[in-house]
Length: 347
Ligand code: ATP
Image 1 (cartoon, rainbow, N blue to C red):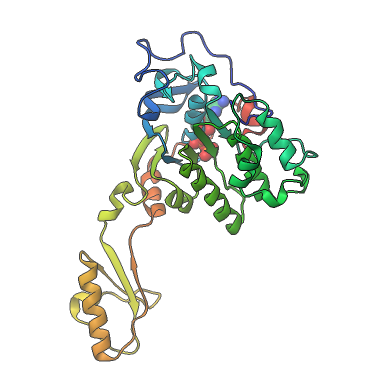
Image 2 (cartoon, protein in one colour; image 1 turned 60 degrees about the vertical axis):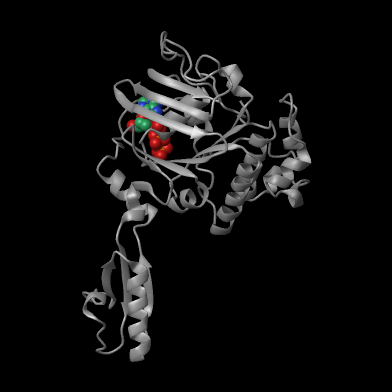
C-alpha cells in the first residue's frame, strides 16, 4: 500500500471473518464504483464500532466522511484499506475485496495518515525518489513535487519543513505510486488558515487528475469546499448522505433574512419581525428573491439603510450538529487502540 512508512498491519484476522460468501458484487478490478460497501459490521470485544454501513463512492469523486469522535470513521476506512478485518458485510475497493485480495488493492491506493514518520535528514526530492522506487510505475518525481507545490523546497531537508509543507510531502509520498484511490485522514488538522487553503488546492489537483479521494475530516468548511458528496456517520451508522449543499435537505430550509434599521422606520409587516437581542430584525421567507426585492425597494424609497443585511440558511455545520447530536457514539469505552493507531496512525 502506498505511503505507509512505519505502518503496521492490524490485529490478526479471526478465522472466518474475511467477508461474505458469494464473492464480489462487481467484476474484479472494474465496476463504476471505486468503493462499494454493503452491510458492513465491526465489533471490538463488545463495542459495536460499525453497525451496518452502506457506501458507494464513484470513481473520480471526492467523498468526505464526517462524524464525531468514536463514530466509526477510522474503523471503516481501515477496513477499506485492508488494514482491519470486518465481521460481516460486502466490501470492494477498485473492484477487489481488501480482506481477501489485499495485494491487488495495495499498489492501487495511496494513504495519507495523520503523521507519517519520514527520514528527517533526507531532502524532499530524495524522500519522494526513495518512495518512487517501491512502485512498478511511479509518477515522475518532479511532476509529483509540482503537484503538491513543493518546487521551492525540493532540496530542503524534511526536518526544515513547516507543518503544512510536511503534510504536502505526505501527499506526495502517497501520490508517487500513481494510485487510483487516495485515503486522506484529516488532511489539514493543525494547519493555519493559509496552509489549509493550499492543501485544499492540492487535493483539488488530485481530483483533476481523475483520482478518487476518500477523506475524513472534522472541518465542515473543508467538506463543503472539497467534497462532491459527504456521508455523516454517527454511532457506527450512516445517518445522512448527499452533496454538501443538500445534506439533510438543507437547501429546502427556509431562509432567514436579517437587517438592522435606524430609528423607528418600519417596513411592511411581512418584511418585519421580532428584533433580536443583537438589534437585528429577522424574518423567514420562502421566496427570498421576492422578499429582498420588496425590502430593498422599500428601503430605497424611504431613504433608510438596511445595515448588515444578510440571508442565512442552515450551514453544513448546523445540519451536521443536528444529525449527530442525537446519535453520538463516543462512549469512551472499548479496548485499547491497536499498534497501528498508537504508532502514529493518528497524531
Ligand atoms: P475519531 O474521529 O475520534 O478518530 P472515529 O470515527 O474514527 O473517531 P473509530 O476509531 O472508528 O472512530 O472508533 C469507533 C469505536 O470503536 C469507538 O467507540 C472506539 O472507542 C472503538 N474502537 C476503535 N478501535 C478500537 C480497538 N482497537 N479496540 C476497541 N475499541 C476500539
